[in-house]
Length: 590
Image 1 (cartoon, rainbow, N blue to C red):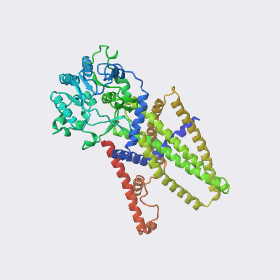
Image 2: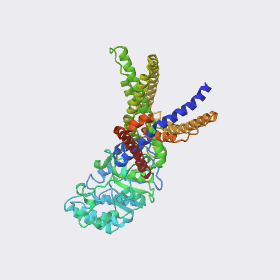
Image 3: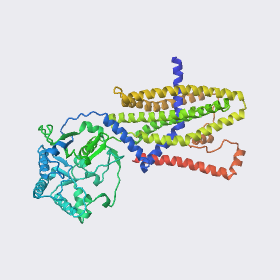
Image 4: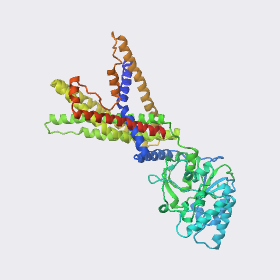
């Protein structure tokens, strides 16, 4: 038994090398094509969906455990009960009550407070409302160094002038304004715009994290009229709508590093000072300001807090070379499944045809259809496996993988190039059978193939049943942590693939060295032009020089069709490497 294992190890390593040498061009091409499509935004939807799945699973599996220290971001919310008892369900909110609540927050030593309320003057108000507004404005001006307040909501008509004037007055007194925009994707808030642009740095989270800035006030002062104030323009009035690079919000870190405290609660009145804590204040009872997230529906002010946590605990970006290796490792796994599917489908279809021939058309089987269903199931299970593995790495190492994009690109390549390869293989086998004319040998080979099909069918059923059982246990039971299992086995799978490939190369080199050492004569033409030509030929996805005699090649070169065929072949090869070059350029320079 030990001897068999020892003999099987080099064979396994050589099989890994053969597989990688056959598939590396397709895998690299798929990775490059995915990078190009993502850069152009063509397949961005799959990247976003991967972010949604991975971040959502990670957030759901993270327990809430927040302890307030001197730097913990704090969100102070206006709860539904307080809105009813203290604000009498009045909208817009009572300015005097708002002033008291803001004063209470500042009295805890808060040095950085973002207020997610529109504090601009009311459209219609009595003398009491005007007095309360004046008192609130006085507090804002007095505490301007510690505050950043929400830019007023866009309006139309004459009321825009009043809001514009109010913003100019607050800016003149040193008040900072913050942009309260939230970025939606796939119908929910799961990601955020990132970049060094001033418009992005004027948002609440960025100002609390990097320091207050006057960009909003600069735009207000530059406006020649209230109509030109960009903060008071509705979407249909804006002249441009710029898109920026996006990144997922780290909602899993929110569960551990964001404190949400209702104002007036026991936790709020515990006497703890917030001198170094960034604080946000907003409402938690407004249904219009609630957004769908991986943690369910959250208030806008809580999502601003989540963005602030994401700035302090960002999702890491892998080095380009490491990300490429991991993507290629995932792609090799998908490519192996696709290759096994096509081999099994061809064998099953041959078996179906053989049964039909034996029964003279009276009996028809559809094992090929079963192979298709099995492939779909296994491919989906493999996608789920990599999604769970991505969740594990997201929680452990804080970087994001997008397995869906790789799965789609490999599936696209597998159903374009793999059928062509199978057709070529079948044509070559048919040619060999036709030349041999040995009926018994053909029948014997067919019997061997049916035996291989039976064994493969049994093993495939066993593997699929085991995978389904494991997946069912992961979904419907709480005692098995499938993401941890997937993450640990993922490391073994990808690491084992590359390590096996490396040692397989050593086995090939050792065997080649032994053959040359034991041979009685050395081939002096080992480094001849022919061998160099054949080595270069393996790098191209087509055959450059046909396997024909010089006389046959001479006749072929006389044909314009052959010239055209060579031209198209070279063009396809150049396009192949050009796509890889462009994709790698986008990948390493992003």
